[in-house]
Amino acid sequence: MSRRSNNRGNIVRFVAFGILSAMLISASCSAGVILDVRFDEGSGTVVNDSSPLAQVGEMYSMSDANWQPGKAGSCLSFDAPGQYVEFLHRAELAPTRVTVEAWVRVTGGINYRAVVEKPGCYRLYVRPSSFHNLEAGAWINGIYTVVRGGPPINDRTWHHAAFTYDGLAMKLFLDGAEVGRTDAAGNLLQMESTLKISNAAGGTFQGGIDDVKVWDEARTFTPISPPTVQPKDTPFVTVNNAPFFPIGLYAVPPTLSDGEMQELAQHGFNAVQVDRRLDNPGWISFLNRLQQFGMKAFVTISGYGTSWWPFGMDLNEGSIWGSPMVSDRCVQRQFIEDLVNTVKDHPAVLCYESMDEVSQYLLQINGLLEGYCLVRQLDPNHLVWVNHPPSVTTQEQLREYNRIADIVGFDIYPVPQSANHTMLGDPTISSVGQYTDFIRQSVDYAKPIWMVLQAYQWKSAPDGRFPTAEELRFMTYNAVIHGANGIIYFLYNPKQMFAPSWNVGNVVWTPEFWSALKQTASELAGLSPVVMAQNASPAVTIDGSPSQIEHIVRRRSGKLTVIAANHTANSVSGVRFRLGSGSSLGAVTVRFESRTITPSGSTFTDDFAGYRVHVYEFVEPQ
Image 1 (tube, rainbow, N blue to C red):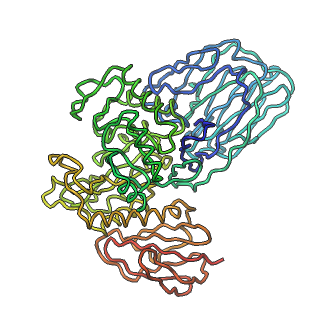
Image 2 (image 1 turned 120 degrees about the horizontal axis):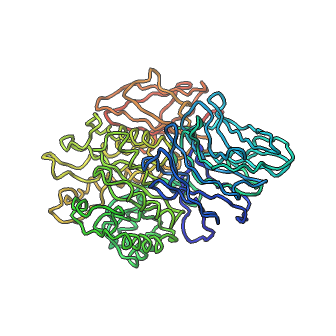
Image 3 (image 1 turned 180 degrees about the vertical axis):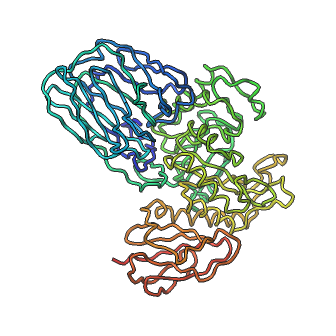
């Protein structure tokens, strides 16, 4: 992702193991670039070269299914033998000095896997399965010369790979750091051959390739800072380089009074989605008010009657929403450009929201990808998020529509069970954690997960009701324990906000429910710095590992925090927590309950009613 130098808008990113918090910096001069393939097309069977040579590469044995979210924008994912991109020979592609670089995400393969290859000139490979590290080769003075090095990179995360030749030595770089060098004076052989990204002849890459560049000079690189999130932890969005845990509300009207805005902010809500379409001046006015109260917005690109739909969508497909739509591609593009250019530098923008629950309608993906890529091109500093409905229960379907967003999530509203809103097998409120696990798996733990939880009463269910305070609190922590990186509540309705005929949002919150929601949001806001802290789960275990109790552990500022929940309706007594180091504990504070527990050596014990959550905090013995 590129980064603006202005200080008006937020820089919103996400960081994870291998998804890096600082961008690679190479020399700034671009005069020597001879191939610049950004893979931002998002569909089709050709890729374009953004260098002055303006070449066109042909994709072989590949289709629209190979277009996937990349390091920035889209990329090509290679997943079968014989898949590659080919550029015809040009003399400029066979220089005597060279730099070859690319972002790669290795997901499999046991043989040599070509990233870039121009036979008789140069090549960049991932080595076989016994190594999984980098290798580069070049024909110098007619002799094939090799440089190898670096750790294995088969970790399904993005890495920057590069090699250079300056006439004296070949150098190999991984994530900006030099990992190999072979001295060899001379010139590269200038063979007439096609240039391939991946390779058809036994060296097909396995995984994603993005931002391929070839230069007619030897470049220099600066090491990227190390990752900041533990393996298998899904990443948190960062705002201006600080992790951010959204606690949000859907369908907030822009007409809220200052008092109502203040009430939301005071109880920990920090992000909102607006309940209607705004014109561009309306957006700026609303964002200004959010900024005044320290909150941020999901800018809705589509939904609630807006005029953008998937590019090229059949007019008949729009009838499922019963809203006006525009099919003219130029009008659609202008709508997106006007909206994004209006709001992108405002500090109250958190992200853009794509079409709500679009995956259930099975709309053609190409038009959605086109819109996604356009938004990211216009504003590389803010991410796009998409929400899935619980009716999507296959990994294949989720992965297909996850391609149109950087942040993903599920909405799940399981109260009461008669609403039949859960479809993964668990009809209870613990289905929230089940859906959180399911969506994390669909992104290979590599994208932020924002779960949308129930804050309304089903009208369609005969025994419809609001969740109780305990149910609401459990569902929130159930999502957090299972790895959610943000919680959004659907929907804001403390007074009659919607038409009485609407079968979802026409029941006004009871005072008891609104009080419970504010209490839960306040707790989560106070706890979110801990939730985003270092994963220390091995530090505290539960004797006997009772199946009813789930927990996570976080380490922050010399303290350990244990968030534990009983995910069943049955009470469990005498749950014994044990500090892995065996050191004696001091007093254990039970947060939000005004009580402490006196430990016994390295253990402490507590009881759990059905669906009860406890949050424990204590100083970590040194």
